[in-house]
Image (cartoon, rainbow, N blue to C red; front, side):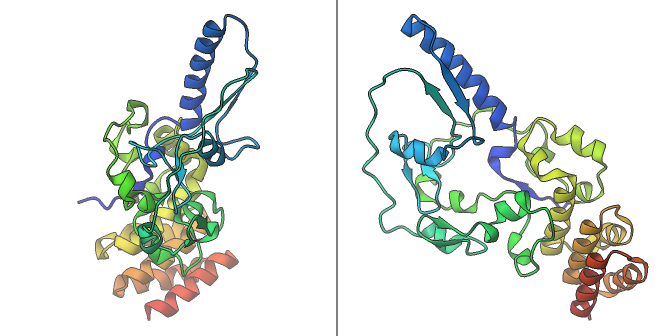
Length: 290
């Protein structure tokens, strides 16, 4: 009975930066014991001048899937990548002589068509980019394709035959503490304060989207899966949310749901709104709603 959004699997538990750093440091200690000497090291997790996937592929950990994810035998793409750089001479592993063959399911099933060619993702069209990295308005033409995703997207991994066949062995650290860390209430995201946002998502990767991004994404999700029962919270957001970005996207959602109450809310929002970008969103929504 509660409309809920979806958070990408990797972001449902503890922030992967923290987990990988802790585990690589433990590995480093073990390596020093084996070597019987101090070993200089650097710990990298998605934040340095190394492309994690390229290193993984060259090290023989897995191969590039056509969705640009690394596919690891037995695990598919449900893996996290980090690098431990060592001042040791190690015998290198050879890259795997495997690929996706003729399979192109991920290209066909991407909701926005962001995988424009094998191994090539057009980032601005990707749901993960729009729900996480996009700080402004989500392009109106993309919004209907976001479905109920509010942080990231797993579709190209979920449809991959290799990943679907992977062993179901979830790492406890990545399991959600609460249902709202995996399938959050869209009403709650739309209405939450900064304090509530921090309490819910502190220590997780979801913090990257910020409160503004999550509330904006919740409005879009409600526009895609909502009903007339969701008009009141959307109307409240369109009329009184403290962020103009959210007010504009709530207006779009009202137009998508439609109906008399939604049109009345849009008309009131138009009369009250003073922000130029939000007014443009409301005007376009009013036109669509009528």
